[in-house]
Image: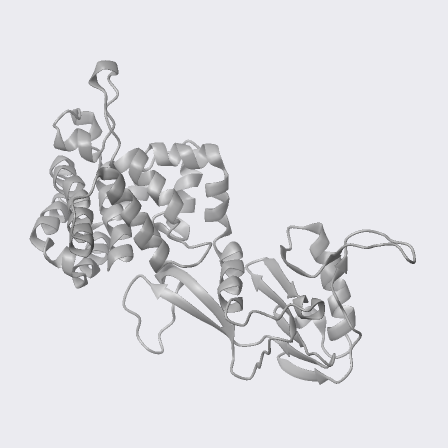
Length: 369
């Protein structure tokens, strides 16, 4: 794979891509800032023109997967092939210096930036192409040519969002596939951080193919459940509940799903309620608690495409964990209310619901730790 950096002292002045035909003297719409994936047919027209203008004379393009082009105010241009990329990520577990970081170790990616060799100025225009799996993403920003400075503070966050769009494409696609997502949610499943990236998409595949979930559940053995829960107790509010939560985890491991659900569903609310009171000093309503979790998630995961999905998780808490019940029409879902009021039938105490309680607590840990 060819790496390199070339400086082009004079390149044609580019303002963007024409969005319509126009004769001499006619107005033409120009696209000067966009993110496009290789799923879109426009990608190939844009990438060919970019390659012809900046790359083909200097690099063997069939060796190139990623590149960054920085066009300066004077139309000189720096071209970086396979530039080193740095990600700022939230980890799911302990990370040791020098060890490989797997995608499954990452809870979220907040920023994407380049090596110190790359110097950006607010008067620059940039073109960034990157490859994830067998797909490409292309971002270009010629705003500076239209008297709008390049937002140097915002760019790393935007690039991280674009990168996640491809890296976690299957997860985002499930959220956009409303019937499938709603079916999963109705059964208590959510794209919990612990399930990303592969477990949640594998679970969705089981639903699409109408297959049993036994193999999926078997992945959550004692070792994995203990790994998930062991980090919780770094947070003071979880540490205060360590013995109680430990009882719930032990019940799950031992197959005592009734005991697990009875213990953990009430503790989900208790942890949120106690943390809310510590911070705000007042008694919350149920809606206050859910809004609080959404607020904490949004503040912790500032990315627009956060992998914690705050609005969706708010809906999940409302529709599942804190769902009401109506005995008159035999509408009694597995929820904090039906469990604590003792109206849930035995068949509602399933291993799936027990695991979901653990994963919900894990999700909340990331928000309030």
